[in-house]
Length: 243
Image (cartoon, rainbow, N blue to C red; front, side):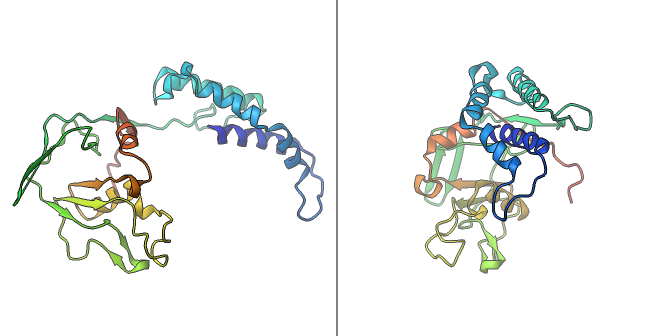
């Protein structure tokens, strides 16, 4: 939100600035004028309203969302910008699907050494991942595949020799960080993100994926996982004809 408002302000100011030649390496007159007017106080004022309780969290499709949209559109119009969305206005309409996951059965795992049940959300956070009325995994085998990474540029394949089709993969969070020559060392790449873990599991035909969370590997505590994946989660509708 802050970036949108700042970019809009800068764009309007630059568009109205005279085209004067500037010495090499010096900022253009329009850039100087924008830097003078787009201040921290200005951005703070916009963000303060959009993030206030009046917008009620701005959940997609809610009244608070509509209030925030109207406010941003008014600011853009006040800057002299013209709407260019396909249907008019400043916003392009995009369909969204909301999914709220409710666990109705205990998460139970059985193995040669016994069984274990995980409580939700103290021990595990569960997300359906697909817009279905009901999703159930019963008797699926759990296969550990390390970090769940396939990276040809590093000659790394955690799925090599593993048949995970229809099974649930168990993966570690993050990516290998001990060797600076692999995965940029301690810099977290996309390979270490949760979304990549799920995407790679799906590419291998897995029915589900479990990511092992630790505070050191994630760089945030378990409470962040609990709050981030709670409530309704939104995504684009499924593509009926995926490539």
